[in-house]
Length: 70
Image (cartoon, rainbow, N blue to C red):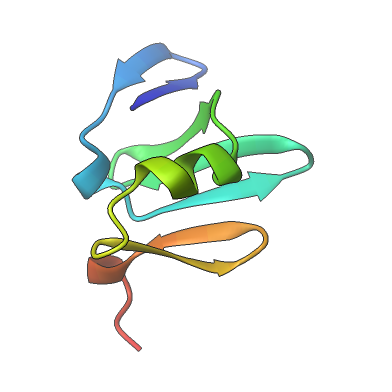
């Protein structure tokens, strides 16, 4: 997935992303390298992501199951 921050665009392996979130009508991914804006909505991501690896916790967050500890 492609993300963008003040340093430019980067490509990420989806499995490495901790979660996806919406904030003030913008969509972001949180990765060990930082927070990056993405062009896809959470609804789009939900249909594309593997449900065995990711789940929608609420309207504003999709979590990586491996990133959840409790």
